[in-house]
Length: 255
Picture 1: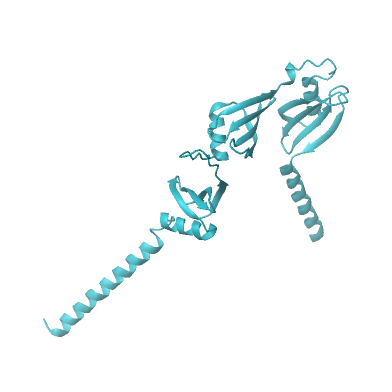
Picture 2: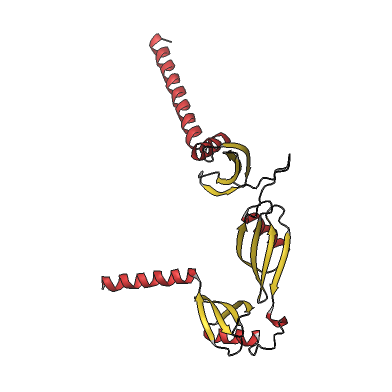
């Protein structure tokens, strides 16, 4: 074998080695790192908020992190793929020594209640009441409106208030809850979400919420006369109507 042949073989082997190395680097950089690493996520949060990450946990492509800033503790959720911050809450810290209690998130409260109660959750509102953070949860169940007070630490239901019109015994009421229901349904065909009686100086009134095919409205019906005092349309429906009106105006301008 001549020296030229040996030199050519060595050159080919070297080129193959360089090519394999380049391919490996490209794959390692662009294909094997779809998700953020723990160090990358930690550095991003500390750079973004200026605090120090104290704890880190990953579950179902979501990073659950706690960080401290100015002697305050915060809890946040970060999308492991995009790096976007999904939620950020200031933590409740018990002042007793060696006891740090974390406030449950709205998603955790919703999951707990879904397994304990029957009905549809309408709203969840957080109240940071010092040492006793709570959630106020409104649930509709069989045309009743229930208001629950839930511990933000344990998720335990502290109190429950149910407004059930069938059990109301006020003799001044002429219109029953069933009458109010039928009056509302005559205005909007759909499913009755709840019926609530509210006392007032002029005889009281019913609030009847109906979820129709194209709208969701709440009717205020006088408990004595049966007159419809007001009709409230939910914001989502109003936004849809505004979008439809804007679309119609655009079409008219084009014509």
